[in-house]
Image 1 (spheres, rainbow, N blue to C red):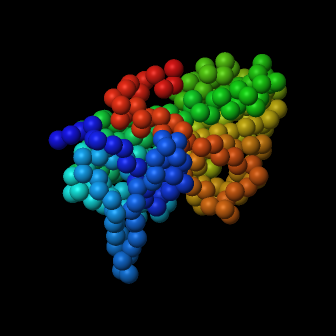
Image 2 (cartoon, rainbow, N blue to C red):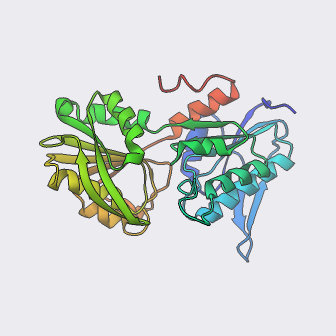
Length: 319
C-alpha cells in the first residue's frame, strides 16, 4: 500500500468545519468535496464526491457535543475513505472525547477512551493527530501512531505579550494536581513561578477547594488547564486564589472549551478577568461572552499535517 499518498486531501465532518476550512486554507488546498448528513431515522450518511485513491487523507473532526454523533461521523468517514482505497488515513481530532474515562476508578467502570481508540483503529485509521489529551497515556491505547500536540505553546506567547508589564508579578496556578505538568510547562515558557490548588472532588463535576500550595498574595495569577467542562473546578480555583490566597487579579486559559451546563454563568460570575481557549471546540453564539477569547488552532494543525505528509519530525514544532 502507498502509505505516503500521491497528494493531500482534507475532509471535514460536522464537528469543527471552521477549523477544517482554516487548516485547508493554511495548506493552500481546497476542502474535500463531501457531505455528512442524516437519514430520516437519524442514521448518519456520508458521501465523498471526489476520488481519494492513493491519497493521503486527513479527516478533521472534534468529538465534542453532540459527542456520540460526532464520533460516528468520524468512524463512517474513515470507513468510506478506506473502502475508496485511500493511501493513508489520518484522523485529525482537535478535541478527543471520552478521554476522561481513561482508567477504572472503581469496580465495573468502563475504560471508554480505550474503546474509542479501538473503534478508530478498526474503522481504518492509520494515524491519529490530536491536541492535549486529558490523559497523555491514552496514546498507549492505540496500536497506530499518535501525534499529540500541545496547546501551551500557543497559549503562553499570548500571555507573554498581554501581561508583559506584569511579568515580575505573575504566578501560574494549576487548578488541581492533574494539571501540574501542564502548568509547569506554561510557567517555564513565561519564566514565572507556579502554585497548586489542592482540592477534593466529592462526586463528578463537583469540587471543593481545600488549600493553596505556593504564594499568590498580591500576584497576577494565570490559571492553566487542558479543558473546561462545567467550569466548577477552575472557577472555584479563581475564587480561592483571591479570597484565600490574596491574589490581585486572575486570568485563565485552557485548550478545550467544552462549556456544558452552567459553565458560562459560572465564568460570568467568577473573578476571572479573561478566559482564553483554543477553538478546538466550537463555541455557540449564545456562549460568547465578553470574558471569553478564542485563539485559532488551525495553523498548528496545518503545520503538523504538512510534517506528517513530508515525513518530518514533529518534535521540533514547539522547540
